[in-house]
Length: 295
Ligand code: GDP
Ligand code: MG
Image (cartoon, rainbow, N blue to C red; front, side, top):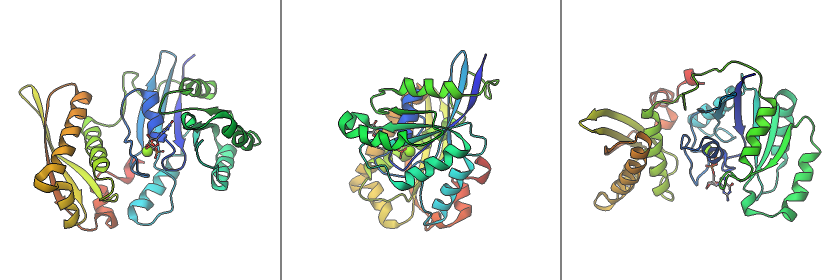
């Protein structure tokens, strides 16, 4: 018997969805950031084994749309439930479980196979956690409730086992040697974006995007040129930094990670450009890769 199906990980921003995907797949496919809502794409990571194939969709955090980009993201959350076999709903063990969480859980439970995973148990203890779990125990149509730590990996194997209990019997949807459906180009741009957001933490909100302009083999190296697109001249100055220090820092740490991903030496050239209000402009959003056809 072979099992295969689509699993999406839902939950509020910052609950640890990307971290969990990375922990399950054992390599970096989805952006992890200390700030909420930086995951803009439905990244598909695939867990292959002799007897099963689990296709994971990472969805952006749940949110109330404030601009075109938010609207796009909210739409992609809804779209991501089409054709989904199993929803894993993540909760944060260190925070109260809100009524909005419970409402979401009830609505998913009524239409999907649902597993609840209570994350970040490395930051709490059983006495504090137990009464909260009680609230979840009362809910109906839940396959399992599993306390986990996406960060340390605790119980993540149990979570995968729980998925396998209810994963449909089916042929593999993708070639079994495929690790992710996103190209190296895309992963490279995600690494650059993650590093930029990480180092620019306080200064720039979410107004950057990455365009890869060149990606080619030169001798034994890969030559990559990428543009960090921001909204304002003042942001451009911050991204470049004094004497170019900030851009250099972002570039170096991105390059090291890209070299690991591609397993080869990389020359990375970063540039910064200003495109005003690109977040309000649907055409621009499509240009940057957030295309309706993707969802
Ligand atoms: P997402 O917005 O749901 O994708 O959340 P992320 O995966 O980006 O994680 C948000 C923050 O929570 C990051 O700083 C993670 O390091 C942290 N985090 C995720 N999982 C755990 C966990 O199991 N334990 C702890 N202590 N922190 C975690
Ligand atoms: Mg995320």
